[in-house]
Length: 241
Image (cartoon, rainbow, N blue to C red; front, side, top):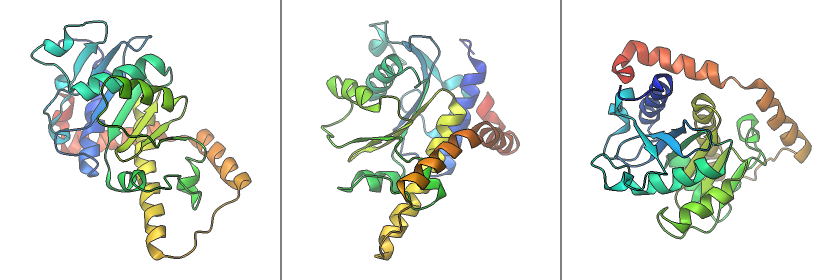
């Protein structure tokens, strides 16, 4: 590899491979990144034009928002990734890892007038009062749009991007992927419940709040991600290359 951060590159490659396996990818679009400098100005990012299912650790590029020549280089990143991820890594201290995709059910929820994750089961309660929601989509994430989204995220772990998709942000790649996995599962449950046409049975504020706190203490994201990497080690070991 041309740069350090081998473990982080391998973990990001694993996240890309599993996002593709779970059908969360979209053509060669969407972006995952991990900040490697304290101020968030330097971060690892997928190169433009690579399908999630083929990304290897050595494919992941290191970019620096202080380098004004980045977007004119041969391996320049996707401009929306450069703008959105760069702004969020710099402005949100907890957003060391940022995963952005357009998965089926989260995107459906993002397209509804009521975009709130309702506390209807244990998984949906994980995200109770911990999702920032963007109701003001105004085009692809460039310039001022990137700055606006970074301010909107705040200290939340999920940003539901209205009329767009979803983004998870966490201190580790494992936690960001775990949040993404469970958020999409929660969206699938909620959309399925809406499709029945029956009235939703919501948990009380007290129960939903308590369950969300229990999720924080339960955190099994590292165990989950380690298991996913063990599967890749057997079935797609080239992700580490």
